[in-house]
Amino acid sequence: YLGDLGLAKVIQGNNKATVAGTKIYIAPEVWKDNKMDFGSDLYAVGICIYELITGKHPFAAKSQNEMIQRMKNEQPGNLPDYVPTELKELILSLLNVV
Image (cartoon, rainbow, N blue to C red; front, side):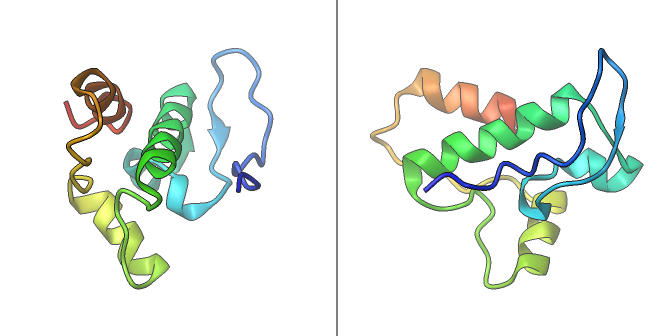
């Protein structure tokens, strides 16, 4: 189901907004700088696409805190072989892995 997009603040133009939203969708650079922009939104889209394809978060862990640490320090889990190469590249670019 799709129910939580972490929308917590409206952004106007290219201005950066204060961090708010669902923790497991926040880009690693946001944790560091405490600011988000359109790139942060694209990171969240990458996580959503990954979840739609695999049924799990790319940094799946036993707890939310562990998941957040994995997001900050690790690469996402491998995508299944049935995912086309072009789609894998798109997802990884959204997650800033390429």
